[in-house]
Structure formats: C-alpha cells, structure tokens
Length: 103
Image (cartoon, rainbow, N blue to C red; front, side, top):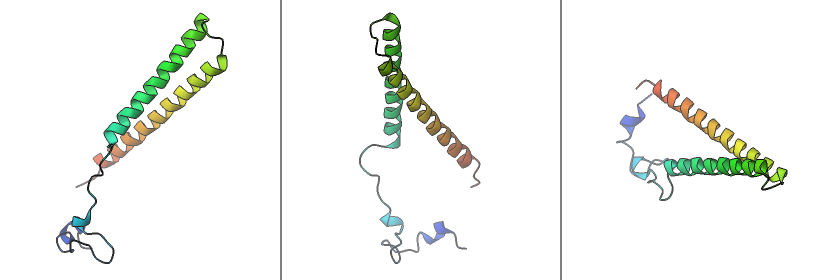
C-alpha cells in the first residue's frame, strides 16, 4: 500500500471525488482550544468543591439547617471530581498509547 504522506503531493488541492486534499484541511477554528476548556473545567470542579466545603462548615457551625442542600452540593462536587479523574485517566491512557507508537 502506498504511503499516504507520499500521496499528499500528488492529490490536487481540492481532493479527489469528495476526499479533501491537504490544502483543503480545515483551519484552526476560532474559539476555545482544548487547554482553555480543560482549565475552565478544573476551575469549575474547584469551585464546586469549595461550595461543598463551605456548606459542610455552615452545617457544622449551625449557620444552616438545610441538610439536603449541603448533601446535594457534596454529591455534585463528588461527581464533578470523579468525571475529572476519568478525563485525566483517558488522557493518560492516550498519552501512553502515543508514546508506544513507532515512527
């Protein structure tokens, strides 16, 4: 099978029969990149954990007696943290897989 990299110079700029060529590759979309989305997610998880911690402190000091609200905040923070850990695990697995690729 021919190497796709070698064929890149052979294909016309518009591609062949609906298959885009190298010149028709999409440019970087304006907007948020992966890093900014990841940082925003980290900040959101941190905020949720801080709110849960504040709610527990308020419950323990007697400033509030709404146990359901505190319980919901703690669960929401826990779920957000679990999701963040799963994303981290998937990124680590992808990095390890890429690292093992032969070039």
